[in-house]
Image (cartoon, rainbow over all chains, first blue to last red; front, side, top):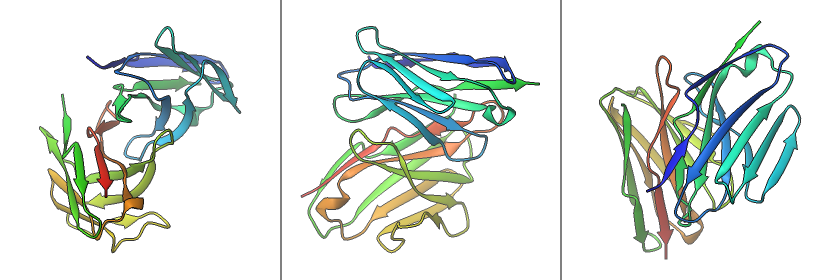
Length: 109
Length: 115
């Protein structure tokens, strides 16, 4: 079957670095997405990886290993506004998105 | 846990016809539903936000007369693609915001192909 796993909740300190992991199993693979969502708001796109490696975009970076079915989102210089849920989603061979349940990130001063 | 059920998963229609996509919230009430469109290998694009009992709010550039959104009850929101054309072929997905510790519930998505 198809499956996405990510931690339910993580806590980090303002100014620190946090890594949110995601493992996936899909029928075929057409990319891995990360989204940020604040409560009651629509998710916003953070990154898309389809090739192995690290892609850096400001304070956020995303890594993909296709052979391991693994991705992570790295957040640096954490700010209080980064408190949100982070959703991992993999696209299968039919271009269907398989969503993880989301990781709630709590930032403490 | 809470689930958003989206139907149909796949639909093929002729150019000029209309297609209705339904999203139902199971075991919870969704006063708001987000509707997205996604092209292959691209990010989700928010099309509109539907609110139960009031008119939907459309994002800039989305034709409200073409993409009719109705949020008839606290458990059902529909998106109707009217007079569909091949360029409307895409993947449409709905999402309901969560409450408490859960932030979002997504439907399974609908792949629309207009021929």
